[in-house]
Image (cartoon, rainbow, N blue to C red):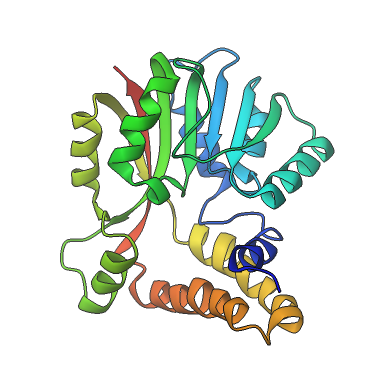
Length: 250
């Protein structure tokens, strides 16, 4: 029988994204790098199947190294890269964001959409800093509270799932403490969740349950990852969201 991570990868490998996001906002975040690096070396941390890597490689002459711990995701990214017309190049490597096997000051840009929470926001900012050239850029999307008065149900849920969730101002303070200069921040639109993430999961649900619906662990992925979170988002989407933080190493 497949282990839990196998069911996870089996479900999510068929999705263009493994989290909320949008190509236009990925491109906009890249355009906000100031000054824009020439032929940058980019490290995409927690790339998944690499929708953001493909977007960056389409718009810029760059060298992207995409890292993830799931070979199934990386294999799909490799296939997609070969099928797309790209300005940049993409290579993949199986590696943990906790132990990135790269030399100091090896990259001009580190990119991480919807994945730094795995390591923790502050810990990620500190640990990855050594990999950036002086003046290099770090771009991450992080889940934050968008209002102050948070209903108890959604506050309790996210404080349990991700205790490091905070407000934008709190995240900006962490960035400053970690000795980065904030260039910009912007909130992902709600359709980046509803259409680009939960909508894809809903379309995948039927085939997945037809194949694995009799397995408790597989059903849990659908029930917790999709149904529970999507319902919470429908009810409380004005209170939280993903924010892109674009920063530069001082």
